[in-house]
Length: 72
Image (cartoon, rainbow, N blue to C red; front, side):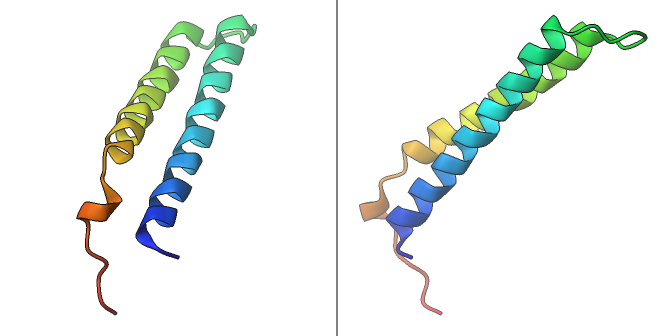
């Protein structure tokens, strides 16, 4: 797999993780869980999703033509 394909694959996976975290946060905000601080849980999940969004944005700014493949 070439570098550009690897970058795309990682970006797609990060997008999937972000979507799952957003779905979890949404479920937490609408669910009824006794004895759990739902708002705090949802905020933590949201913070993690934001970190993945930030990583994905940085990854998408990488110019694959400006990166050399490592020789094995």
